[in-house]
Length: 413
Length: 103
Ligand SMILES: C[S@@+](CC[C@H](N)C(=O)[O-])C[C@H]1O[C@@H](n2cnc3c(N)ncnc32)[C@H](O)[C@@H]1O
Image 1 (spheres, each protein chain N blue to C red):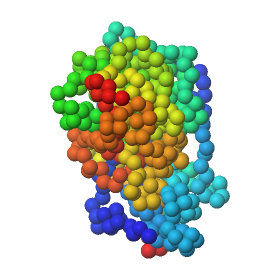
Image 2: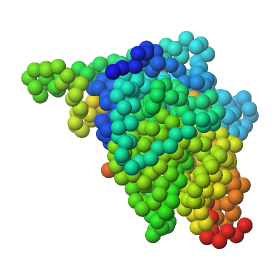
Image 3: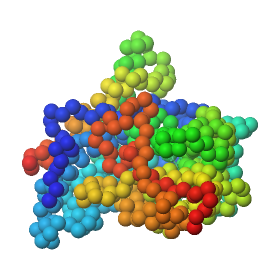
Image 4: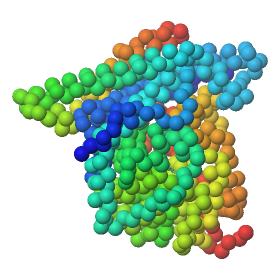
């Protein structure tokens, strides 16, 4: 039976964790929806509720797990739980866990409804603004209306976003991208930085450390979303040609407009395509990235995306796939808490990803064993030092795991 | 210009995928969900009032649109975020107290 670790227990005398960043600390730009006072506050309240759940109720879930759930499990099985699934089935009977889960799900649904209404009430303006911003901006956008999105994106739209990343509500729609940017900021309480680009900054920091003088000439970003992280990469390598691929047209339209509005990404080409079977009729890339994409795919898709990263890579190039850290040796209660988004927040592949050997998958995709490595990446949130966020909001924090694959300048296998 | 559609209904459309039931009685899930939403709206309202008071103090009067255009500065934002935590501690008092009393 695992006891509650002392540093994780809340004591009445410990200093309270820092509050979430206010919504208005988001980096503004011309493609972003406008929020009224109450809309901003409603997002702040979503952040406040998540903060409350993580800081106040979650420690009680942990206590209940150690005090009630684990003894009940052992009494029933005659041994401790064998894995997180067995553990979870007992945990799901616990009232405190049920309340925490119920409220966490509710805050997610609240956020989606709030963000969507904000966007819909000004959608015609957002559509025309995004068109105007793109005109003569240098940023290029190529859509493929004939593309069939991967089934996992429509059957289980990530983080409960109605219609997911791929549904167009109107001609030239940007709803998915716009509500993604404003809502994610609320859910994370600003933890991904004012421009939601912390993963991109972590990637650039990693590259500067591990390949100090390297200047990739061609960069491919698979599953670029709203292009926030793509832009950081593009700004770090202003001489590179950058191709950013996504399956969702409303994501890409918003990404292109956002990039044009913020500037510095005129060398990015946004392309609608399936990263699983990418047929780009052009030169290979020095750097192929996927940032926080894999957990929203499927087992076969993951393998296909790794294969794409191998096929599109030039000799001497680097494939860089950034994700949530694996559970590995974490106690079962921690694994269950981190698994929550997979089960209850439509993150289709979140849970199974942790049972998948990504190094083996990279080898299967074509990378030589000695050229595949696991590593980690992190970056500060805007001006704040890393690691000052207090109790992590399980699985949504900013400490990443990366699997990298290199293609030697002269291929050895 | 606006969309000639029922925006509230569109915004409230559920995402595809299962809707989890955490309690034995689904009514309990609904009640807690409503409570969460109500709590959020109450917090929004309280903050609206708080903002209004601040704006009034700043302007001595209340021209139309002033509150909607007002953005909390860092200090006010911190105060408001703190008020949200206080409100949540009030509303979910019983739940925390039940859990603590079991120790
Ligand atoms: C969580 S978002 C991450 C976005 C971005 N990489 C970032 O770091 O902000 C995942 C994105 O991957 C895209 N995606 C998932 N599967 C894809 C596929 N097979 N082909 C292209 N895009 C895909 C989704 O449309 C979505 O925009």
